[in-house]
Image 1 (cartoon, one colour):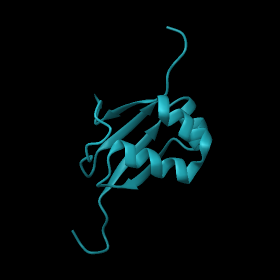
Image 2 (cartoon, helix red, strand yellow):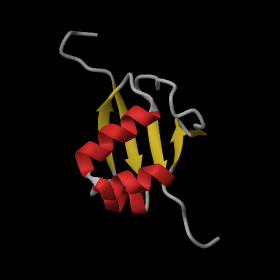
Image 3 (cartoon, one colour):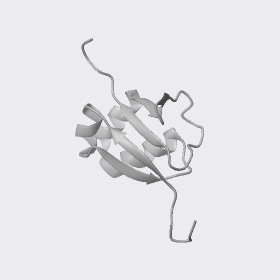
Length: 87
């Protein structure tokens, strides 16, 4: 990896998370946990997204992530899934 290349994670937003973020996906630097990423995204996008992130479920490369403090692997895709109504 060259000094100018930064490892990243892809964040994909769904439903209310997409509306709160104002986009469907974005990149963030790797090396953070879900808690760290959520804090960074809240700073970027404001309280509306912060509120969604507090109650959202997260998939890391398609698998439910329960430990929000473990650093995530570079290149991972994180899906942000807010609670859904209906059934």
